[in-house]
Length: 392
Image 1 (tube, one colour):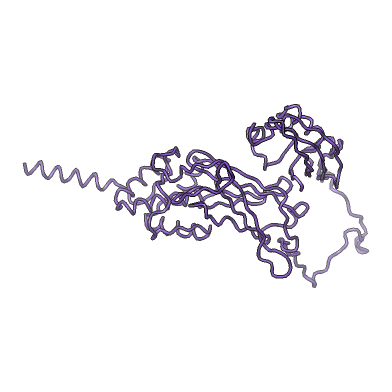
Image 2 (cartoon, rainbow, N blue to C red):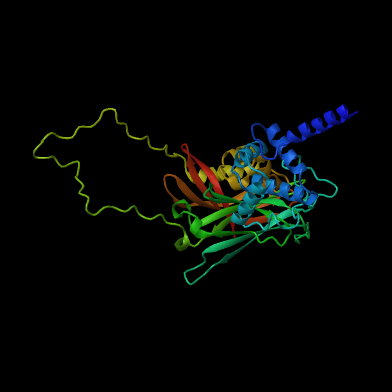
């Protein structure tokens, strides 16, 4: 009996010693196994905060697209780290991203599981029922030379457009900033209730050379347990004097430069051209009129040839073809377009602005007169619609 007791104790010790106290990110399986081992030694409250910390790091601490790549990047970030180190790292990431979370605070993000599915559970605080997303914007930071920032505040709303009430959620909220169809920046945060402060976008973080016509487009997405809501604001004005302008490179005034075209009298051999040197190829220039692209786009929308209309664009604000052609919120809701006038406002070799006036009739028979501004860019010699703004 004594021999059996000793053997049992030895087996228990062996089992205990196999449990890991630091992250092993060799594979996804070892990552999950080691995290489970680490969590099992914590109290229930500490387990919840540990899972919240992992969620903060996976969502905001790494740059990757898709759950699989995010997990791999997370594994590289925390490989070899123990629980206190992971909690401390999550505190730093939360603070850097302006997230109201701390490892020493009570649980606040609901049930987090970086390995599990995101289907709504009966008590899931992220199962927020809303009809759509709205965006409020307001300029700020005016010290006499115009605004220096813009506050972008998303709100989940009901069918009547009224903000809904919810608390205790952890809804991943993403802001994307574009100008003339080019993505300038991405930011993430957590919406825990509908009093979310949103994003403060400083104009000084935007390169002036990247801003087209002193306007930006913003797209915000909010991810609930059952659905991702997305909304865009097109043609928001920025203060050009507050934009970031790189400093001109400093030159050494004591440095003497020689004009390569000047022949040295002590060595009167004219410079030769390297035959192996090639001149960079110039981008192909569009031959068509940008107005023709806009006319073709509107005609395709009118005839419900939405695939052709979508192919004539390169506008990230319109999202995927499914979003673009949505019969409720996209161009799929349009029955007919009657074009009144299309004119080019400004045009260069690589970009153009086209104004259009037209009547839109939806599938319920309602007709609306619109004045819109289309931004176009040169893509391999073809004009593509890269931005879209409805004017008052």
